[in-house]
Image 1 (tube, rainbow, N blue to C red):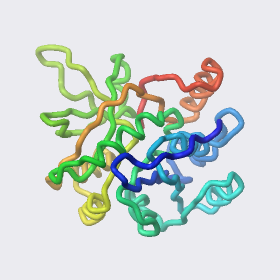
Image 2 (cartoon, rainbow, N blue to C red; image 1 turned 180 degrees about the horizontal axis):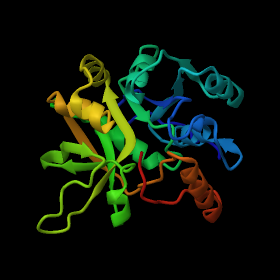
Image 3 (cartoon, one colour; image 1 turned 30 degrees about the vertical axis):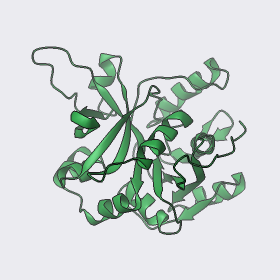
Length: 263
């Protein structure tokens, strides 16, 4: 897949994508280098970033020498970081090496995230009100199984697209009527100020309990702007997910297909 040349951001801003990758995922060790088709998973994510119109650069951030070596072989820019508790902490450390107006965290296990979704986050960041410190993409869930799946992170959204809560449980609870469930995508955007705020906030009990890093901002009283995306993609969390991703790749003859899944 040939990369599309980035065009100047319409607001004259420099936005870069950072892809956090670690080796030691408990459910799928070595996941970033697992082959999807004939290329590693992280390569597919990087391609999607480079095909986004408003992304000036795309960098992998890792603390693993095997991932670093693979990136060098593939011609992908890579920065080594220290061990970090979350992908966004890794992104924040990597961002110290690059001057930009905003940084977009594209999760390394989202091979089907679309360039259009990345651009939507970039455009929202360019016009972000001061009350918001981050932007997060979301999509609708179309099946009950995904709403019940703890690997799929759900989000509840209030007025002005403000995130109220994230959870692995099906929220809101369908007491009187069946709600529309929304899936959080592994696509987060931050201004430099937003990244600094994220790093300054300690991990609170909600984040530690749910294992959802964006809860750090919510439980410290900061606002996250949610942006809709028509593409829900598929996150590769387990070897079974990778098998499913192979099927999507084959069925689409290389074209990415929309399915509902998250990490």
